[in-house]
Image 1 (tube, rainbow, N blue to C red):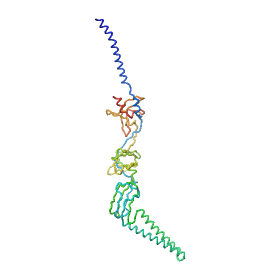
Image 2: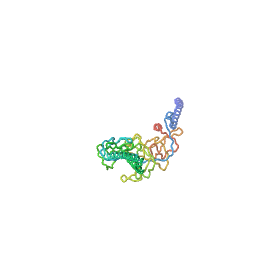
Image 3: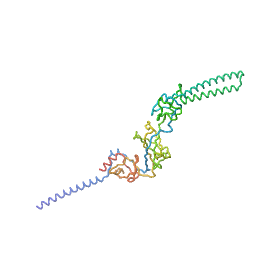
Image 4: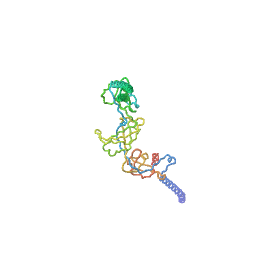
Length: 366
């Protein structure tokens, strides 16, 4: 009995040792797999994009509220030169007009007097020409002196000058027959103000403008700068402008002028940004949000903001070191636009993944 049990023990022992060795090897293989560094597959390598962390100057931004304004240098106020009755108005508020386009016609008694002056000037010129002809003939017949010929020529010159003056007045004021005064556009642009209607009676002493025309291929964005931020705003700083009407259609410019005075009502200083106005989307009096960018006097590690992965209230990036991918926790100092400034966790020159990093992060941290 004892002999049989002993022989069974000798048979079972090698089997137990073999199974133990097998389990030990399996455990070691698992440990090796778990400790193996994560590497990208060939397909992920093709789709991944990389960027080097670099030391750069830290940028900051200031956000102000303001409005879009027409360029005052390209805005014309049109005044009525004469008083009278408005016969017809050909344009409406917001219309685009070309230079010399007819805007309105006014029938005026003052224009009637110009017509009378024109007829008188034409008659005086005809008389002066005839007098010079007669005087010249008399002089040729030795019936008058040379002095009388010179006087006749002088009178002719005066009559011609008077006629030229009245004709120039006609051209400047666009006077037509029938005592009609034509109001024409002095520049091409948009009607941004209209203070005239048909059948309106305009007084000759009216000092208010009847049209405002603005050429708005370029416009101004006027920002109201709080007193606390005045020292941070300087000429030529880059600016980004957005409007409520086109929130995703950003306009870019620079600080062109600083108005060095504080508005008594708003307690703010105004700055001006000149903007190109493609498609005339920016219209005078639109409300605008103006972001002005400026540089701080320090440098930090800079990376694309798109490379940052936010997880569990922390920030991470994926670092590629010789093909080995690792997760790195970082501390963000500030994010401005497409750039993020790193306070700690990265060194200059380290290679980080900027595309498909979320997929790789999930695979690496599962």
